[in-house]
Image (cartoon, rainbow, N blue to C red; front, top):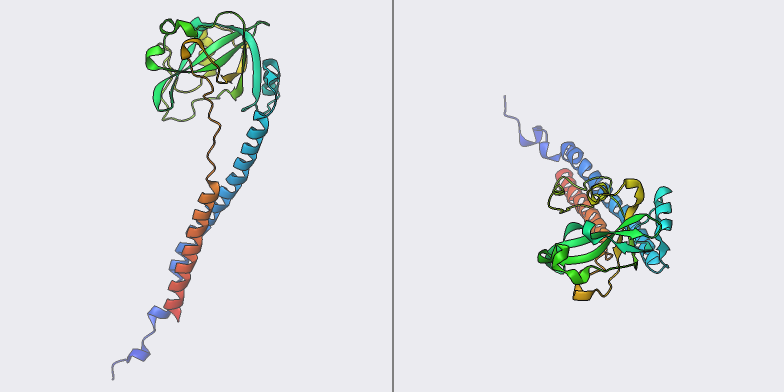
Length: 249
C-alpha cells in the first residue's frame, strides 16, 4: 500500500479562518461603537459651547431669577448673575485650587443680601500664606457691594472617589460641598440660595483675591477621538481581509 501523496491530504491552510473572523468581529463592533459615541459627544460639546457663548453675551440675571431656574430644574451653568449685599468675611470657606501654576485657595464668601437671603460667592484666588482673612485686611470689603459673575451649580456628591474628603476642621474643601459650607458657616439651608456665584475679575485693594477664575475654555477633541476609533476599525478590516484572502486564495 503506497503512502498518501500531498494531494491526497486535506489542505488545512486553505480553510476559511472562521475562528479568527469570529474573534475579530466583536473588536470591530466595539471600535465602531466608540467612534459613534465620540460623534455624539462632539454634537453635545458643540451645543454646550454654543450655549455658553450665548449666555456669556447675555445681561446678568438677578440672583432670585437664578434660584427660580434651579427650582424649575433648568440648567444654570455659566449664566451671568448679579447680587447685592454685604460679605460675611468671618464665615468664608476655602477651596483648594491652583491658579496660573500657583497653589492656594478660592475664597467662597457668603454674601448676605438685602432681602435676608445668602449666596456663596467665589471671590477668587489667594496663595497659601493668605488663607486667613487677617493676613489680607485690604481684601475684606466692607458695606454693601454689587457682585456680578457666573452662576455655578452645586454638586450632588463627591465627583470621584479619588477626590479627598473635605476637611471641616481646617476649613479646606476639595470639592464644592454646598451643604457643608452652609452648615459650617452657620446658616439655615432654607436661607441660602442653592447655587454658587463665580465673581468676575474685579480690582480689589491689595490685589487679593484674584477674581475671574472660572474656566470657560472647554476642550473639544471628540472629532479627533472619533477619527482615531474609526481609523482603527478600518485598519482592522483591511488587515483581516488581507489575512482571509491570503489564507483562502
